[in-house]
Image (cartoon, rainbow, N blue to C red; front, top):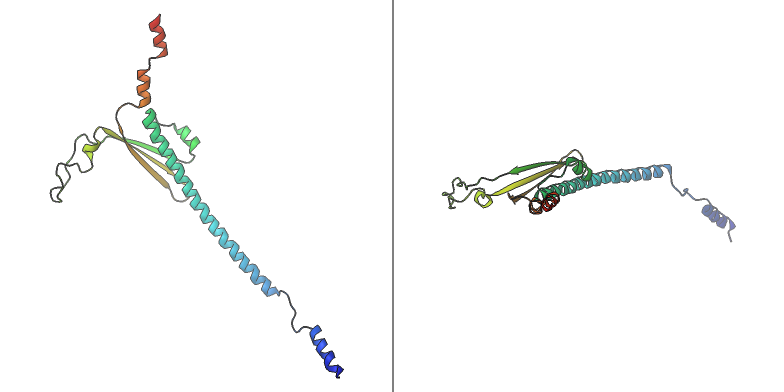
Length: 179
């Protein structure tokens, strides 16, 4: 038996040809990749935040415009600017009231297109006697502006609250009539 060959094989197993573990270069590359992943996540989170801010501003504008329309129709009075800013901060409202023309206007070129020439071009006859209330709500959650426009045709009659007030006798005049 050759003992020299066994000793050299044992010595070879005990001294590895290459050291195992992380090298400095591997550590730097892994840290760079981790940094890129974190930077990508930060950019995408910023994008999600911007989209969320725009959506929230759009919802606030819609809610404020609907509330203003409902208030104008139900009570005949607009919501005060202080109350609007308290409920929907950062939202600005513009209210316009238009009265469509009382008579229908002829549609230009209606004869050429096979339509009734006496029909209104804009539906004026169908909407006569109604007033058009338009509410435009705007907000600026970032560099772009969010605008929501709502409109409703309503009768020109007094509001239901005003009618109830007119129908209900005043408490002071009722006492005065009994004396």
